[in-house]
Image 1 (cartoon, rainbow, N blue to C red):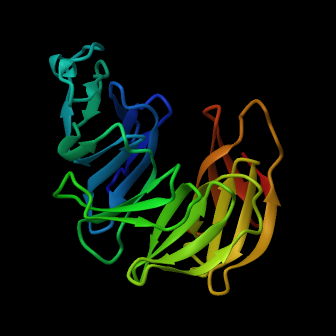
Image 2: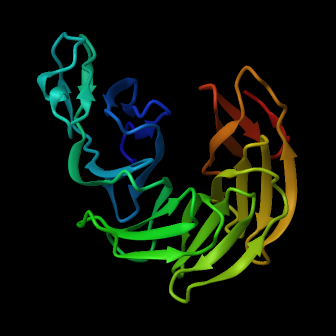
Length: 278
């Protein structure tokens, strides 16, 4: 979230969501929602943050105002409400403001895996299903999906909205493809590179034709988006202490990958040197 200092929002396997601004933080715990699978900011309004759990999504206003906090480390009274997150206050510090619920939807029949905002339609976002290969289309003003599209029989691990009403999709079998939402067809599909579930896919900010992906076997793969061809596989050293890669982000300059690992560690990988530097 582009403020000064920047606001960062993230979630973990315990379902906890943390809002960080500078060196200050506020943590939220949600009951009976499981791991956080996706946290993404609305490209048309970065005040809006979509958070996705396995059977639930919620839309919040992030906010960026600071205030003086009381010297307490216990949850406040609102934590007892079913729909409200538990808010922890940090003693004796200037604390970040609360996040405010706009809309939400939850159903035990859902099996979400990822979410991404539309880059062409304001207020529209997509969710993917892990088991049945469905893409659901939503608007932020409604708790009911507007469309359900069956794109494949294989479960979906991650999705990324692209220009021209297309979705970049990674599947649980290691396949990656570009799907045309309007015409209901794959423009490109490729099964080279990964042998396991693709957990995260990103466009390179410097080379828009380059796709970077990471998977359960711990490798990072590069693809050419124009031809949907596998280009290169980068081998990260297997380290049981930090675990395998679950997520990644490419630096704004395109030279580094920030990788989040299954045991709670973060590593920095240099694409130029092709090695972990931190």
